[in-house]
Image (cartoon, rainbow, N blue to C red; front, side):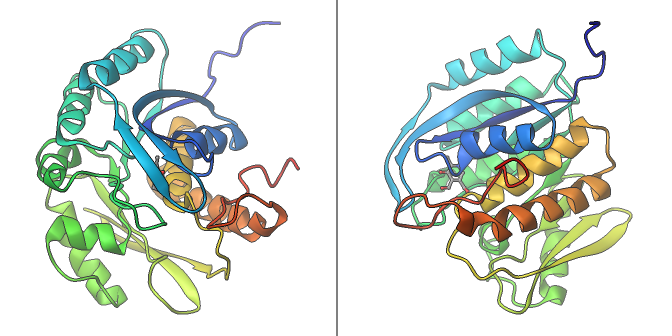
Length: 269
Ligand code: PXL
């Protein structure tokens, strides 16, 4: 059989979650569930379970670059997603490695785990803003991350989400997806802003404690869509639908004592 000439391929540059629900593990499961081949560069290791993060080991920045170089010099990656980058130096290294290509980049500005544990050094936010956000095709902050990036308070309405998205767009990303999952209300509403305008994406809020890895899953699903050559708004719509279903089915899994993972493979088992 002839090889397919157009295998969609996505790459994640992120942290490992030993518990399997977030980070690299969530990203690769998401790519696979959406029919996209996944590659990875691991930026940090975490010793982690559904209850929390017990340890973090950042990878040497030069070795993060070595992984990216190995993959990109051989494999035709259609979209990249970045997640937990842990330190200011790793962010600089990743930005340098991505400077000489124009592969679409989904930047998930991971700062804190669902459990409340810190995943990004406090002094790293500046590098994120100056070096990586200007390279992003889409930036995907939750409400807390948006507030931290803008050094302001957490948005509490759609109007405030839109105002903050505008300020984040001005930092140089091509698009901003403000995720409303941390708000309250019947719907979880996300707001996509580009220079062309604003679109809201709504889904019914799901009452579950199994929310570990939701941010990673959404950003990876968007990258999977971009790798399949979907437009950004279609990639976001498909990603939101996938995450909604993975959350709906999360209670079919029985993983750990804390905040469990979403069911990435709800279509398969
Ligand atoms: O969801 C944020 C996130 C990203 N990356 C890693 C994580 C988490 C949350 O726990 O563990 C490695």
